[in-house]
Length: 454
Ligand code: HEM
Image (cartoon, rainbow, N blue to C red; front, side):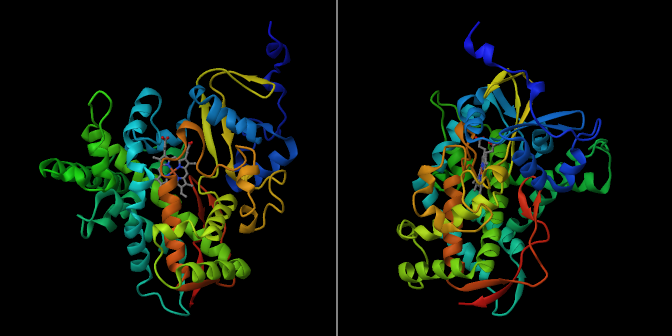
């Protein structure tokens, strides 16, 4: 017998809240999952068993354990079933939810499209979208910046994915995607569902939107194939079409469709949320905002940001890191074990579901002083290098780390640098922004701010 086996404990000994018979803490989780996650971590420590309806979840609250799941033993885990079932019809076998060899090949094929130099080519599109969004904004107006940022990143996603060949269609794509995501999730959450092929108004609309999106993507693929040299375009869809595996094989139209939908969905909402919380936090912290304005003034002097400028804007990047720390759009990751695994001194069987929460880790006082405070300065003195790996993971980690991290960081930097040079935002009294933990950490009632010209 090995020393490890002797040391191993049985999972039932794990600490955790008791909860109600059968229901566990499900009701509390639905009502206030962010607070429940943090409080059980505080109370029960680095590894907690949380009883939920018909089962349990294991919440891991230590950087080493997070690394164990994402980086050191990733092949023992799959993504959770709920997120897969909710999104399967929309995303098919796209990168976000596929597994195993299929996922590995798709990731290999898609990776070059996300090379830094490629991504940098999108900065002018991002800049144009930021300018277009500000058109019509006036001094003293009140706007829902969450809505504005969603429109902005949606436009940027359509243009970077498909190029500029879709006059008028961008908005329809956005509406369709938003509807289908909500529709899929609400179906996944209901214990009893009306079959998707029954002709209810929602099912009929869903079918229409699916048909619209599918035919759009397939049409663009066919057009690109028919145009000689079309693969020299630099939109993401063309790059994916041109990608070739070592054996000379390429993605099928269905795979291209699934990846396009996935990139669209994974990319635009998360970035919009990051931007929305940025304006909210800057508006509440005028000293931080003033320091950011000062950096932008001294480096850009009123002109639009270019790629070369970004390396000279450390405070801007510290602001983005700090926003992603406090309001990580992906605030929790779930994995189901497909093989037995060990975490710390505990052995677990296959089938166990583990939860890793950015929301909890990013506000852990062991790693962050004054963890609830918005202090971008903390990133300026080498905090990123001092933190243990696993203590900060807004983009996940390991092989399934976000493929769009560079894209998101570039878009956030370009948009903030562009808009902050023209406007400051102040919270509207009585309209506090509240994070709503759904798939992403959206602001529940939007982010209502008053605009002031700089
Ligand atoms: C601030 C913005 C973003 C955040 C916080 C974010 C966060 C994440 C996280 C945490 C994961 C890992 C999920 C897991 O391990 O279960 C992920 C995966 C992914 N993200 Fe992002 N993301 C952002 C922007 C983007 C953008 C802009 C794109 C595309 C243009 C994108 C595309 C993807 C894809 C395709 C995956 C799946 C990768 C794989 O499994 O191979 N994301 N993202």
